[in-house]
Length: 142
Image 1 (tube, rainbow, N blue to C red):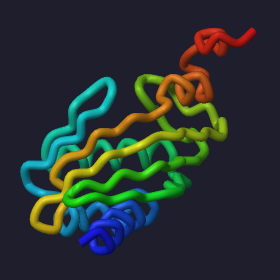
Image 2: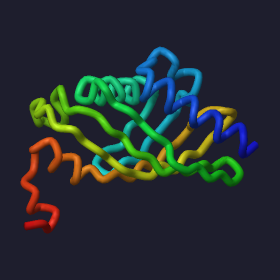
Image 3: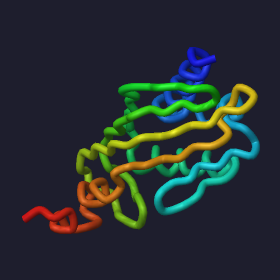
Image 4: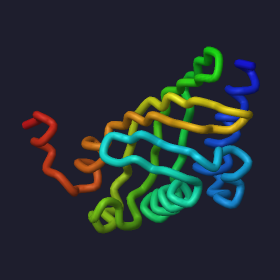
């Protein structure tokens, strides 16, 4: 089961985030999907579709790279990096043209061969600094 779970999550990331094939969400996502993120909770396929659409609008050249995956039972965790150019509004910040890099971890719970639940931990504060929405000193730099 571990190999199947890893492959499913890789296909999900590649199709939805890298290829922007949002019409394929139902292949990967359970109807009662929930993503527990730092600042919000995304519930259901349509809300996830909207989030992915917003991400692609803000970072049209977005590349989501999975660095490592670990699985145990119905759980999969992966460390990832998203890179792209900030060319559209994101969280109220207008396009800056800045290159951004966001790093994070996602824990996935799979159910019946689909992603049912995710817990996403990302370096969102760093991204807001990179796009100019927050001053660099918010990170403790000089």
